[in-house]
Length: 91
Image (cartoon, rainbow, N blue to C red; front, top):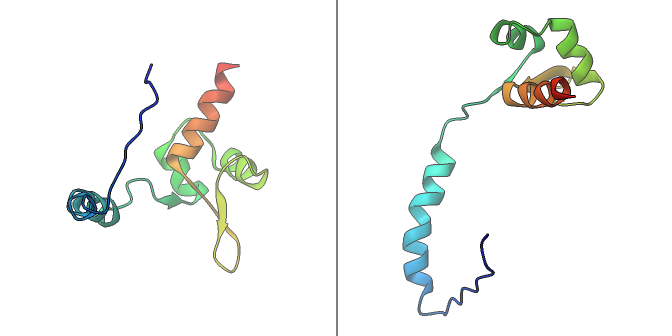
C-alpha cells in the first residue's frame, strides 16, 4: 500500500517541471481516440453477442452512451457496452 507522500515544488523547480510535463501533455492531446462513439448498428457488428435492439434499449434507459447531434442519434463506446454487460453477467 502506498504511503502518503508530499511533494513540494518551489518556483525554481517550475521550469524543470514544465519541461517534463509538456511532452506528456502533448502526447495525450495528439493521441487518436481508440474508442470512438458508435451507433447501435456498428456496435452490434463489433460485438456479435449483442443485438441492435438490446444496445438501443440500454442506451435509452441511460445505462451507458449518449444522444449525439440535433436529432438525438444514439451512440456509445465499445468499452462502455462491455463494462456494463460484463458486470451484469457476473450477477
